[in-house]
Image (tube, rainbow, N blue to C red; front, side):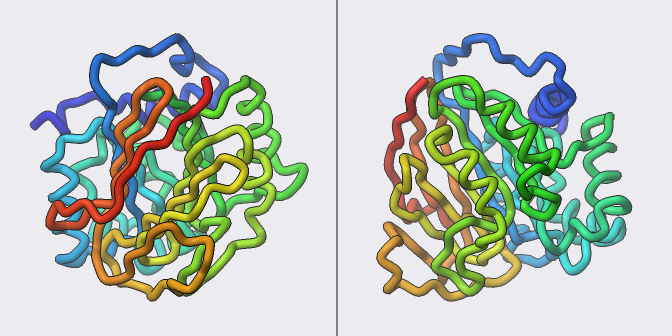
Length: 279
């Protein structure tokens, strides 16, 4: 199968970037869009999550961003039983970030699992490039305060001009869902604002698109199959929300633009549009 045979270019390239090696910073001019899906909060081994994962796999995407949480505690056994059985078919094209459920056991679950996939140690945060965009996998569960290694690395990575970047981490800075705004990730948010066009998170088990702030459009894509949490539709920051459907965020990336769509398990586009970035 293509998905199993393809080289794990996303993860390998990301590791090189995190370690200061070659990260493909040369110009990219693909003839067609690079398709990237993003979803989190689905690794419970359940039928709803499996149905969504099958939908994503059937689309034959270029990359998949898993936005965190392997239930309940991210142990090695749960990665095998609850993650591999659901999203394992996408392993070779997956760029993960860790969630609050799996990070406490990262040494026995998250890190060993992804090291086996990539063939080398998995860093806590990294970057890679695809479709003319730079993607930044950040870690809301590791240290991200002022002076932390992650924040210093992020600021160095963002020195180049332009906004053709997508940052993703588990707990979103802003949310109209059950968990609400995550104020502790303010340092990560402050670093990427004005430097990125798209921010993607999970944690709240629903789908949200918030109105742009300082040029950054934030998406919450946490309807990966585990359960669903209500959204406060009265929140004026919301441009779109859905708390009744399981689905994922689809991004079609080209130099200078990104077509986005929230897509249900059944393949219905629930929200769509195009965002422009500055190179």
